[in-house]
Amino acid sequence: MGGDVTLERTGGVAVLTIDNVEVKNALTPELGAKLSDLCDEIDADASIGAAVIRGAGGTFCSGADRRRWIPGADQAEDTTFKEFGRVYSAFMRVGSLQVPTVAAIRGAAVGAGMNLALATDLRVVGRNARLLAGFLRIGLHPGGGFFTIAARTAGREATAAMGLFSEEIDGEHAVRIGFAWTAVDDADVEEVALRLASRPAKDPELAREAVRSFRTEAGPPGIGWEAALHFERATQMWSQRRRQTS
Image 1 (cartoon, rainbow, N blue to C red):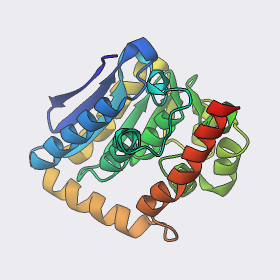
Image 2: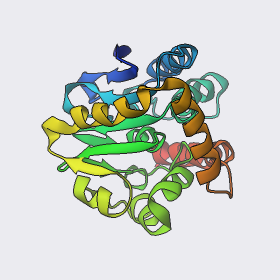
Image 3: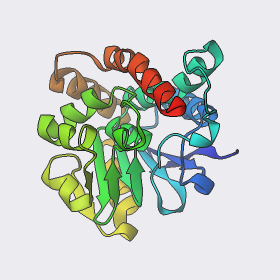
Image 4: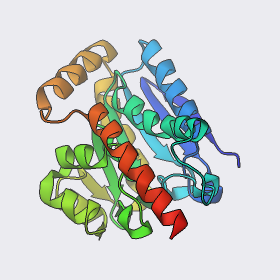
């Protein structure tokens, strides 16, 4: 089980690419750790004023790599708990990047892939992309603070539809409910995302100050993302154990 996360610089824009195409860019603990490390690298480079998150091979991210799930394993066991915590921590690390962030969503964003997309400040999505939380469909409670970060982006109704009722939406629907800024042809997704990111990237220092103010002021209040992440953890472990023993 390989895969990689790479960082390229295009002017003042950092482009983070998840490359695990064998499983449609599903995330492993190792990829989560690599993504977090590259976020540290971006923050340390004052010449970077924006970041684009994308997936290789025409798919954004299909979720967590379930090949690592061991049937009957205790998800609260120390090593397992910490390993998958690296995936959750990667969402928060993307969400706390010191620069404005754009998700370039092609193909599909499913489960943990939805969390990764929701971690960014703005989303550009292919018109025919598939967007699906999908946790309950496979017998799992949502994780990664999904309900909090989805509700702050698309509102309560859309979050209930996706998180509780497993509704799948396409790119144009995502724009209508506020999940994404714009839906374009699949071939244009990354170009549009880069064009948007290049605007704040012209002045990295200002971009970093502006995005800090944006996140602080836009909120919303209520339960914080970090608290939500840990709040959901125990119930997700329960649902995973329940699924494996049923």
